[in-house]
Amino acid sequence: MYDKIKLPYSYDELEPYIDAETVNIHYNKHLQTYVNNLNKALDGYNEFVKGKTLDEILYNIEDIPQEIRQDIINHGGGVSNHNLYFSILSPKPAKSPKGKFLDEINKTFGSLEELKEKLTSAAIKQFGSGYGCLVKDKENRLIVMQVSNQNSPFSDKLIPILMIDVWEHAYYLKYKNLRQNYVENIWNIIDWSKVEEYYNK
Image 1 (cartoon, rainbow, N blue to C red):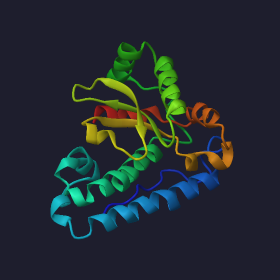
Image 2: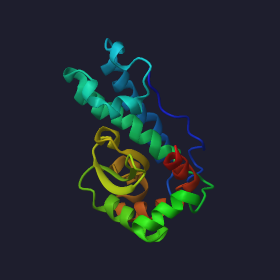
Image 3: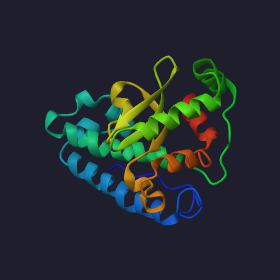
Image 4: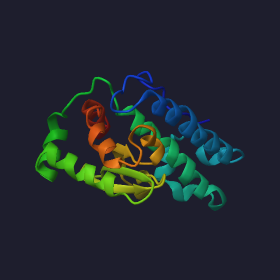
């Protein structure tokens, strides 16, 4: 059985940037539905996933039987993407990464601010539902990419370390159609120490 992460903050602690009602519905309704549908899809296929983390399953998605593969991409990606998204948000975030992660950011993008600008643009311009995402490849090089729907970068052999959810349910109650305002505000609660932890893993 796969599950959602335990939220490291209460529903109202991300205010004023994300409201309590959105966090509650996003976490307990939308994410829970992905969890339920993932476990339902895997019922009877335990031998293909036994002993594997969800991220390992998505990384080796070609090993999953064809008849349930798209369900695992959709619902498994939904669980993995959301778990990462919720885990990197914090009411008391580290405002900057350090060490070799910061060095890699500066080498690749020029500065932290330039990375944020590039990722903000990717998230705002993502057509339809999906994510703006920072990933690392096998050589620990950093790449900004757009992710459609609940596709997972793991299935492209890339490790996601920062995701900005731009499905409308992530922001619509507070921001309505103003996705740009939501994306620009989310930087106030992204915890760079957590993103750095994922980079160093």
